[in-house]
Every structure is written in C-alpha cells, then in structure tokens.
Length: 309
Length: 266
Image (tube, rainbow over all chains, first blue to last red; front, side):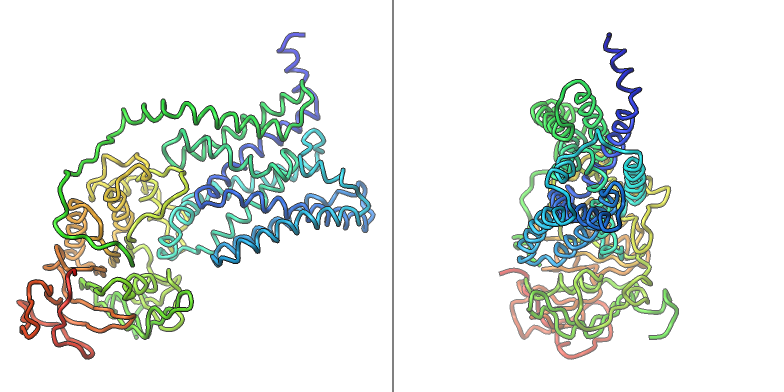
C-alpha cells in the first residue's frame, strides 16, 4: 500500500473524518482566544478553567445518571460548558479586583474543581477511568453529537473573536485607555472569559482538560516570535493550531500514541524551532524596516523629574 | 446645567465635588474643575498631589466615591461623545510580548463608547494621524521595539485619530526626548487654533508656557489655586514680586488668586 492509499484509507474512515474535523475547528479557534489571553497576561487562565470544567463534566454525568439517560455521559459536555463559564467569570471577577488574596482564591478554586470532579464521578456511578478520557482527551471517540457541539461552539468563538477583535484588542492592550474611551470594559472582559470557557469545553475532547491551555497558548507563543503585528500573530497562531492538530491526529492513525499529548508536543517542538531560528527572522526584519532612532542624541534641556503620578 | 447633551455652550469639562479613594487612602477631596470650550488649562502640582488621579477620574478610569463629571455637556457614561475625547496616558502599558504595530494601536483609538468596530477608513485615518506626529515611516513597526519617545508619539496619534474636541494629556513632558516634546506642543497648538479644548498635566509650564490660558494647582488632593498661569519660581525668586500678565485675567473663582508661584524643580 502506498502512502497515498493509506492517506485515502484514513480519510475515508468516518471515525477519522469526525476526529479531523474536530481537530481543525479546535485548532483554529483555540489560538484566537489564546492571543487575547497572552496579550493580557492570562496565559494560565485556560488551565484554571480546565480544572473547574472537570466538576462540570462529573455534574453532567451525575444528572444524566439520575435522569436515566443513555449513555450516562450525555450531559457531560453541557455540564462542562456551564461549569467553565461560571469558573471563567469568577476568575475574571477576581482578576479585575486585583486583590493580593485573589491568587489564593484562584488556587483554591482550581483544586476544588479537580477534587469535586473526582468525587462526583464516583457518586454518579462512574470510575476515575471515565474521567481520564476528559482529562487527557479521546478524540478518536468523538461522536456525531459531540461534533455538533464542537462545531457550534468553535464557530461561535471564531465569529465573536474575529468580529470584536478591535474592541477586544483595545481592552487587552491598554485596559485603562479603553476605560477612558467609554468602552464597556467589564462586559468585554467577560466576553474574553466566556470565549475561553467555551474553548476549553470544545478542546476538551481533542487534547483533554489538562492540556487544553497548551493548544490555546503554545501556538501564540510560536507565532509571536515570528509575526510582527497583532493580526498576523493571531492568523499564524490559528494556522499553527490547525497544522499541529491535524498532523498530531494523523500520527495516531499509524502509531498508537495518545493524540492530545502528541499535538501539544508537536506545538512545543515548533516553539523550540522558532526560538532557535528567530535570530534569522529578526535579522531579515531589521533589513527592511527603519530601525534607527531618528532623534538626535542631545542632552535634555531640563532636569527631568522622575515620572510618577 | 441646562442645554442639549452635546450643547456647544456647556463647558468641555465640568466636575463638582470629586472624591476618589484608592486602596483606603483618600486621594482627592471635593475637587471642582471647570474647563470652558476652547481653553487650554494646565493641571499643576507636586508628585502625588492627585493630578493623574483627577484626570483618570474625569475620564471614568479611576472610580469616584462622590461627585459628578460632565464631559462636553454629557454626564460621564454612555452619553459622552467619546469620539470627541482624546486621552494620552503617561506611557504604554508593558505588554506580554504579543506584537502590535503602530497602525494597530492607533486604530484601537477608533473603538470607543458603543462603537465596537472601527470605521471602514480606519487604516487611512490611522496613517494620517501617525503622519501628524512624524511616525508615518514607523507605521508597520511593532510598538514593543520602539523607543519611549516613539511610543509616546504613537499614543498621541491614538488620541488624535478621533479628531478630538477635548484632549487630555498626562504629563507629556516627563522623561521624553525633545522632538517628542515639540510634537506635543505642536499638537496642542494646532488643536487650540481650531477651537479645541486641552487639559494638560504639567510639572512645569516649560515649552507650553505661551499656550496655557489658565492653571489649576492641586496639593494633597485639593484644588489650591485656579487662575492665570503662574511664573516659575526660579525666575521670580522674590516672593513679594507682583505678578502681572500680558493678557486679560479670566474670572478667578475661589480663593488663592493672589498669584501663587509654582516651583519648577528642586
């Protein structure tokens, strides 16, 4: 069998088709949200939401069991959506207050999320093994119903993230200026938090809750090394997200390796490569842009005060 | 106050009884400020006297615990014509490494109030604003790679891209190279000439001296002076010196109109 025939076989498998579609959608949407998170120094927010989402998965499972639904994890994704949105809103609320005790409050919330998930899944009649597929992803078991959830949420996140990108950029880049421009800063921050929450639930099946944040953040880390503008960073990060998701998933078709971990390690390998080759890009950029300081080197005419409000 | 929401007869800035408490400390106490349309007003005071906080409270950045603010005739909030208000902060916040070009930063000045998407000609307007501050050649460079003075000019362009009627500048002269200071002065002069209002925080009148119509001084969070721009203490060492001014004095509300002299620098 040639590689082409193998590729054809892979693409004609319905299971693989669903998985690839999910990977493309998640790979494209996650870094868009991630760009805003990195810009506002909230790279770890996705991790926090992932922890809280686990409780949501277990709650959904519990409710599904009580309601006698088959299979009993029908409500796992909706449960995760609700829990992550609540969790993300809480994280944003704590961040906006800027209290020093906020750090501890967040830590306690994250641990509570994991512990609550483990406890509730037991009550729901499941085992920790059931949780593993959510913690580490199980893209090969994506059902058609899951795919609808993933597609709807990913398209929604992309539409909001791209449609409001200028306003979200303004808020993430200089929050004080945005407030002084009369922008609804609190509402826009909540939009970013909600988008992060939805992305976490969308990416949960692909890379797992523990690695969800990596798919949001690592492509952005790669892109910002190479790109020179915000728009290009976002576009490149999204492209990298799609590429590593599809390639990582395809590898699992031939090799028995976990897809989530493969995707994340691929992205990190890209980051290492970009970091090593960055001086080449930087050198090229210096060549085609005016890099010299046009100001003459003159001493200040006054003794300048230390700039403090 | 009577008048239509954006009535031209109303003051550009009208603040009454502003109290601001930050971190348990009362930073501003009962501050009143009125800036008429077309006026260039300097806000003076030592470090920590509350100048920046006052400006931030006027724009709704710092939360007020008491008091009312009207900008361009509308109460602070959604009613303010935000497309007519420009603000230049002291510096760009330190980002997390995501690059943003000068054009992208200036275009972000075109989203304001309930306008969440920039207009179609946003890019053209942003380039024109960068041209005004002499940064057109750097339009596509990342602001992270720029010097402090260049970043400051991009911030001026971000305020100018709105073609503001009211421009608020926070210490445009501190720690800035001379060409950028000159850009600030030229910006204020151009805006003043077409009838715009400027509120500028200064440590010393310096190169702005001949543009300033009136000065308001803060000390310990209160207004201690409101009147014609004072001379620098260095030039008038004699405290009994009678201050005279070449132009007619505007109405001087409140006490303390006896020609307070401002200290330039220790």
